[in-house]
Image (cartoon, rainbow, N blue to C red; front, side, top):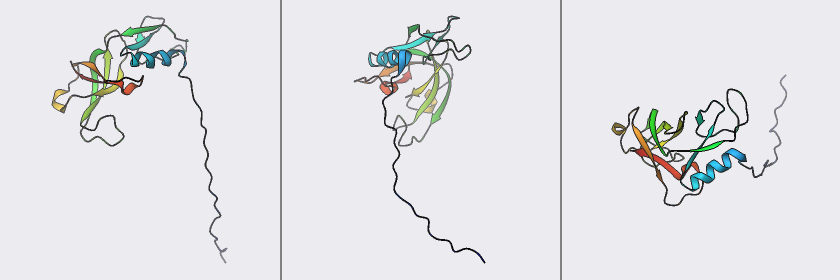
Length: 147
């Protein structure tokens, strides 16, 4: 004989952890610089510059804090075309996600290239930042466009 199954009792419950977080000593200046239409990287002990900056060296775990300005122009090292953007994506028209190695940086930044058409994209092409009319200190303050 099997037991009679009853509908489980439920009660509404809302669980939140509302808090504000400081971006810290490396990311705070990075985002402030974006508001000022500048891009910062962080210099590692070996002299290489990482963009976006990180607080700790990914190889040595050493604390990093030497911020340096890099160019807002660079080279596409890899890319993927988004032919049909979804609602939550950064542009409402076709675009590329690309790894862009900015002049003065040794790592690539994953960001948006507003190239207009897939045929305008190629690995090795030069791009430059197109800044928003009003910048607020967000990574969405700019997109890359062909240089």
